[in-house]
Image 1 (cartoon, rainbow, N blue to C red):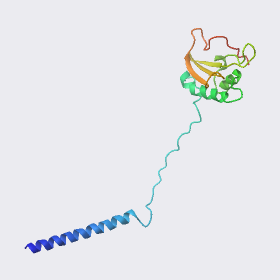
Image 2: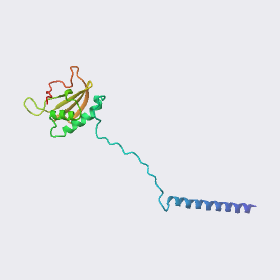
Image 3: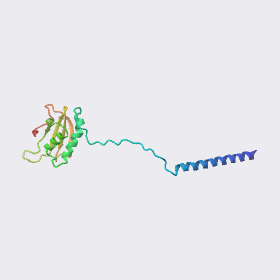
Image 4: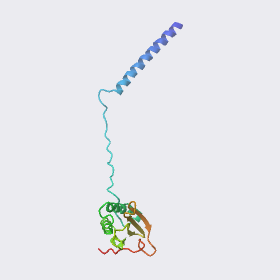
Length: 163
């Protein structure tokens, strides 16, 4: 009886071993098929590419408009008119800001030298978008500040925007 158990165990192990080898071979053929598996294409929408800051809208705040104001300021600052107040005013008007709400400091000193720093602003819904550029400014700077109690955005003498 002992011999039978041993033979049946050997037969069982042999059969089991053959099944394992057969399954392994079948598995390998699944890993390396003769033809590549069919692929399905899933269409995904193309990413939206922003063309720049959002355009102005009556419902927007000064903070909403700061990116557009900053972009306009940086474009003019990189141009040959980097310290010309009119260039900033004209570019901001072209971007949709209202000229009648703007202020700008003089381009030239009292002895007719170029200024070291030029400031310009747009009053928007009780707040001010203020830009500063010039040789004494490390980089063009734009910020949102509260409207002055006396009205307007810039302290001191500003030049008339009469063009």
